[in-house]
Amino acid sequence: AQAEAARRELIEETGFEAGEIKLVSHGASSAGLASEIVTLFLATRLKRVGAGGGVAHEDITVHEVPLTEIVPWLEAKAKIGVLVDPKVYAGLFFISQHK
Image (cartoon, rainbow, N blue to C red):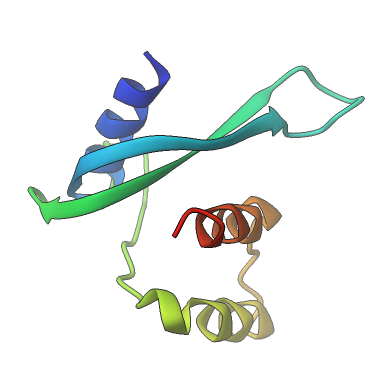
């Protein structure tokens, strides 16, 4: 159920469909403060199937950045004031362990 929801959200928000999706990690987003659980998936064999951007109330801009350039790209965004969720770095760590 979670993987299928992740597949749908990936298409809706990014316009990419995953040929394969696998669970890499899950855990509390704010341990001790909330019961919310965050689940991270690795989507591979991607195929562009739409524009992405989310639904009506969402304002999502999709950036295609090579994995080898992602950390400097995120650091540059942070330097200009973009808030980068630490879960992004956690996801990058976990996928680096699944190569």
